Image (cartoon, rainbow over all chains, first blue to last red; front, side, top):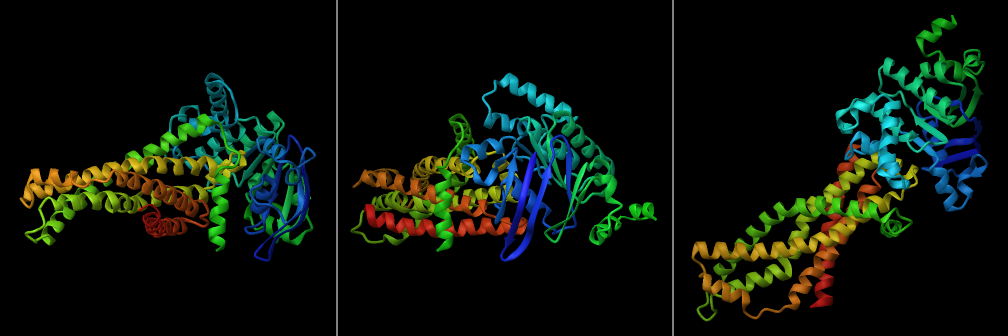
Length: 248
Length: 242
């Protein structure tokens, strides 16, 4: 479980996050939604240690990420898998090398063990045929899937996905969502997804948190979200024509 | 001043908690190829022509009958060893290697590849930058020795082919009044310049933010700052070691 308490962050005097607190449960897909510039990505970066919050703490199964010794922080980092918005694959390495990279750097596994693990992860995301290809030779959807394979190769306890559907066609988008949900349930991972894709919200959003101008305005499950009374959330949700028609 | 402070803090992070030695060894070899081996062609071209032009222009200026013609070769040799091979080669390398390092790291930064390393718990600056700095410090002196050799050879070719100096006079001139210490001085310079080029360019690339435009700017700044630092260091080394 991940718990964030009173997270605040300001850049050049402008408050981006204003005292956000939440809990994210194990084995569930937790979504953080909101419009552009509402602080979703900054919150994610605060959680994974790329941006230090001005105030508050982030607890990983009770271990305070920002107030612990370096070794504990390092071990927490090694329990994380992160899928970045653009995949963040290393351009100079093949798909297979990208997935194997954390194993090479952080483990003492034998080459055979690494090969098996990489093959398993690539097969899990359906990319065993693309192992020898370079990131520049694969599509955006494939890059995301390689990113997922790399994120899960170390058996993470926590999976973070920053807009996994951005730039993808609806069909690929659904496949990526399903893959993330399956992996979350299969390996009992605490998954946090940043998105503004309404299809993801309705399909895989087990717990949803809505951010607006750096504040948490709503929290709940996907079955309740359309019944919300929060005007900002209603405006966000029903800007989608399909949902608006469904509501009517 | 804050930028200089940030630069020194950045240098400190290179020696922070690192990864396995085998990882660094592999990275060092990759960088030696990327920085050193891939620069051989441009260094060869530049050095040969600079040596050739030095020979022709020195001969053009030495018209006194009391100065032996072999002095042309002596001047070409000392110019190559003391200044042209180490400094001009490193300025050329600042353009090639410096811009390459800054744009590579800048692109890695804006495409979140550096973030991906940090999230994995890898010391990104040490993993990415330290091998580049060490590779530059190792390969630049080799390139400069190669450059000096080709420069003197270029002078020989230009001098003998155009008839401004005979082969005998040239070979005599390059051995005349030779000071072995100058070779040591020639090797110290690229060692220092390699460190400056690789570290300054890495610093510029590593802290790039924004998009493609900023990567271009970082690359330009890396080359400009590297060249200025080379010239300052060149003066200081000459003052200290000669």
